[in-house]
Length: 267
Ligand code: MF3
Ligand code: CO
View 1 (cartoon, protein in one colour):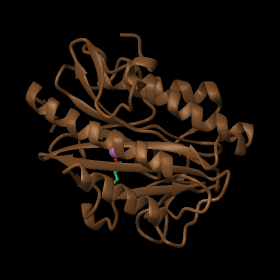
View 2 (tube, protein in one colour):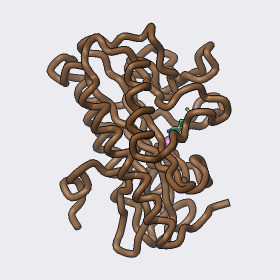
View 3 (tube, helix red, strand yellow):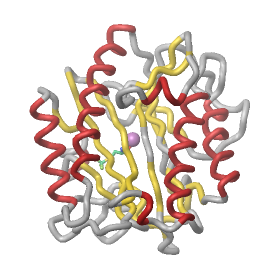
């Protein structure tokens, strides 16, 4: 069931998203060689608590942490660990969710540890392509457009850069989603689709848009820990995510970092 949000609900989600944006800003400062993903998890938990909110992921279907920290060929949902110490040049996706006054926000960023100078050219471009696809998907979130237009916008960026789009493998799907009182609501938003197909977008719908690209084959598998999704071929993956409301004027990015939306979208 697709749940439409009232203007008041969207303001609460914007508050949730603003908290999450600050959490990501703190995380970005902390990503450096030598830090463990468990350190980052503790930081995220503290930053969320300090703002009077709660983590969305902790306890979700038994998930044991605040953050997902996926390194290298790990695509999403890797559980932070004391044993995972980041090294210069690692590609790490940090995915976090916040619930505030009962409303969720969900967003993810991918970093090259030590800065993109420490990645080879293809890897740096993968991270950029995935970020560009995030914004291409967001730009398609306008009343009158259809869900397939959003998926197609994401897929088109992957094509242009020659990246693999992680979306479906062996009948298992991963992608974006509706979000609100639940972290995961209908509908699913895949990273590939057909323009002009799917449900029509209207003001009051809120989506988490989350392209996942990789350098090689986009086939994925669930690791033995029961959480982590990794590429089958071991190729590096990147993942970016924002929570976005459809308004009559176009997309409103509820998890945007300071200045980010203004810089990426005209208007
Ligand atoms: N952002 C993630 C997603 O939408 C949420 C993590 S789910 C959890 O898939 F189980 F890891 F918490
Ligand atoms: Co999500």
